[in-house]
Length: 331
Image (cartoon, rainbow, N blue to C red; front, side):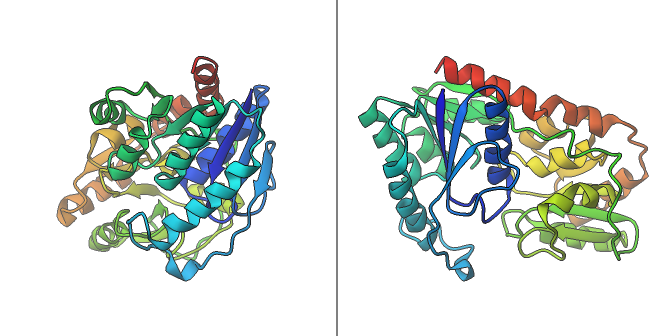
């Protein structure tokens, strides 16, 4: 089966969506599928799939722009999509747009015109972007948690909804990894992700200050930057992972990477985070600084044993890819 995935930011950024594209594509190739990823950046050095790099110039100073269909980033993705669709092999059977709005709309038109299937994974989370995705009428919409699937069914009851979570590379992220040396006072609380108001890292900084813990923010705009290959060492150098993100966030692959590395998680108390973290962490309203600080302190003093690792093992990319492969063949 030939599968085309459109991922504008792949090769330039390495966030949750780009991790999803890379890991899923590699696993699908292992299962015998032909995967081509159309991206704006250069080829990932560990990719087994075919990469088509579009290479549009990007003004990164405009990162974090607006949310209208005509803002800089939406129009850039629109242009990228139109170019990518012209390059897709006509034998392609399934197209997967990952950047929403214009990309989903143009991919839907391409799929209808060429009598192909379109699959969308709800990486944007419950909200406007995925509501738009659902109303482009994909042949299948992938919700990553029970909550997201229930939300999607209400948002558009006429679309086929299946549940497949994101995954983690259990060989890459492991508690046995030798930690990197960090010039920070213990305990160290880690957060991974682009620093934005949506991710609410400022709440973590405020709460950690109350218990005199160091905070390491890794990601664009964070306190330190690491190449992605160093991230397994970064996780094992820290004592706790915390994720105070907005309840509208779709998933949080970084939480899986942290748990696979042996770290417990203190996360926003919402249905999505509870389903992902399970018994491998604590949940709190991070807007309550006192309660958040108390949860961080409590988590640091609990002996978690192998609970985080066992929770992460439920999300192996190999298992996830097999679920996708089965759905593709029954789409």
